[in-house]
Image (cartoon, rainbow, N blue to C red):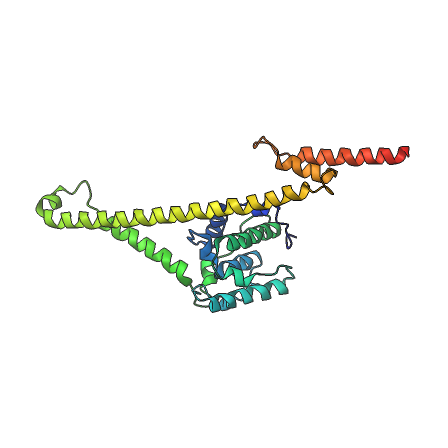
Length: 271
């Protein structure tokens, strides 16, 4: 089971977009940023979907905004972990700060764990919307989805159709005002989209720096005089320094370790 996963495990190289797609598809949500899952409610429901009925959803607050309310959600999650014997300590104090990297790391672990239990197959009999409504705490995400749908519907109703020349001729003043309002709305929407894209780029750059720093630490560690000549250190450097991005150097590194062990065994037999 994937309760304890090393930091260099492939689970921690799953991208932000893949995590968000996984959450939105499984729970019928519309999250656009990792930090929107900082309240712990999403994590609770992911475990509830993996182990149907294991989480007391009436205690989960999808509308949690304060750190106190978020902590209560994580308490529920930790209690469920203990009950299911999932050996994972939750860094609550870091997660409730809504820092993208901390929350991404925990969600990467959660995805790997859930996939190890259900084989990555979605539970088609699980109704996420119905489960969220169990305690009457639908949360801001559900309300947000309704507002977005209503907003789109409003825009469609007020957009002048190409086949409506009578209205264009009879009420030019009203249509001009409507056109101006629509243009203003479009500008605001585009400005928000630009801001979101800038934030996404910032998150991606932080992710890149985060993982690069870890790889650099491994490289320095393998270059220590005490370790540099060991077969394991050499195999790790093969992977780090692999030039061809299309092919994994893992097989070559494994073969190198195997050959080294065989050579050592032959040397021992000769002695």
